[in-house]
Length: 350
Image (cartoon, rainbow, N blue to C red; front, side, top):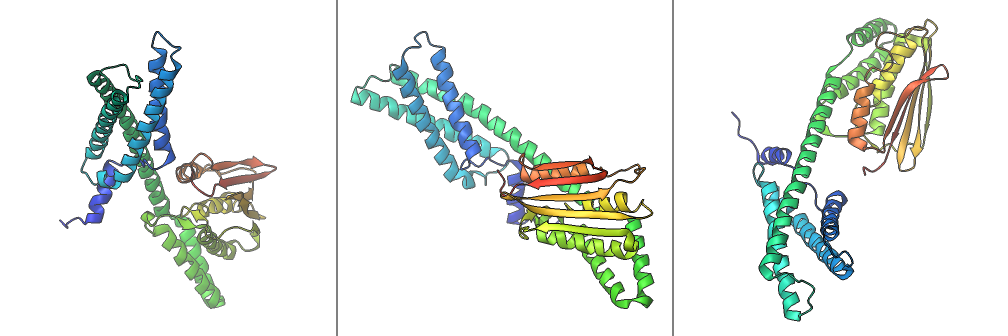
């Protein structure tokens, strides 16, 4: 058995127990909200709810404490992440409890030394209560982060599996038709046959490539679509008409590989191929704020096939939602005698 590399070991540990990024807003927001809610609930549970100075001091102390915890976890995350198994979460929990214990002891000592009288509890009781509360809340919050990380990891695994299945699914009829087209062109138009082979090889390169390469770009996806349409244009001839309305699209826009090409393939297969007279496929796109807007239209045949234009749309929706978050939109359905697929993809992930 080959020895694993440090990079693969680190990747395995990261996937096994991925810590949240405490430098980012979601984790910081969770720390502050949990602390503020705890102070508010404890204040509401008291008999004297008019003691606003105590509430203000408690809120200030918890806010300061949350900042210290967030800063420590942010700076030490890369070290904690190297621990094996679930130890990163255990270490984070111990660190939170230790910080709260030391901060509580320091605050109680300063209150007594300065004789401000802001903390009425004795040293031992004050430190003990704060440490127990921090231990319980820290465990609950870390459990939430762990479950969230596991859910995201499962979603990523499902997405990768869908991409692999999509890449492995090369329609046999498309391959056979393309090869027949090449065979017919070899004697009539050798140059066109050579271009078709090149286009077909690029399609197979994209379809059989490793999904671990990450995102491609919009320019690469549009180039792949053009190669696919060039092959179909030779096969269908004048029955296939393409209208392109692409305006000011950023070629370097990050895009999951093979996201648009299957949609265009569906438009040709389900919208043009069943019609004796053929039809027009419209490929549109434009900037949409910090993102892009992509629209694909094809005519509706009188009697749609069993698969229909919805084939693969569920996978596209899941991949878009995973990559771009809730701001992304994928709409599909009949409109004005055509089948329309509309994608609105935001620029930066939230």
